[in-house]
Image (cartoon, rainbow, N blue to C red; front, side):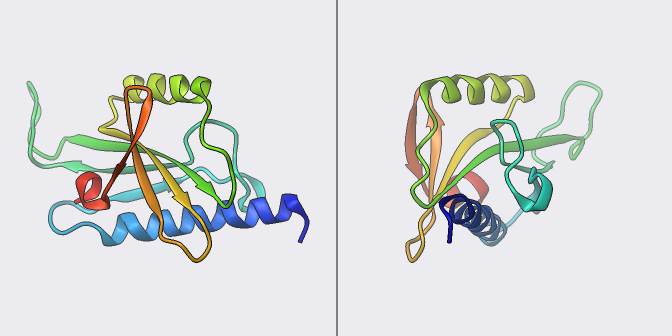
Length: 137
């Protein structure tokens, strides 16, 4: 398999495994819906965010709003195989996007074949290893 095809294959599996983990880590509450920003032929599309996890927020309301009117949003970037982690410039972009959409968290999902999927939460300018239930529970 060519290096490009291999990278595309591992990126696809990283997104697939991340979707599975998010779907199966919820105990109670509203179900997370996932939006995948895959490009043509299921390849990666442009932009810093690969997936968005979104669900209705039934715990909070706002002025003139009722419970369930607001959303919880988690931005997810996936990395598969030996893909490098996001650069400091990428972290700044992720933070800007998160502020713009008032995201609950920014997550890096790293998947390597025959290993478990690891989730890291962006905390300042560093990645902190987290359990799926901390974010999606």
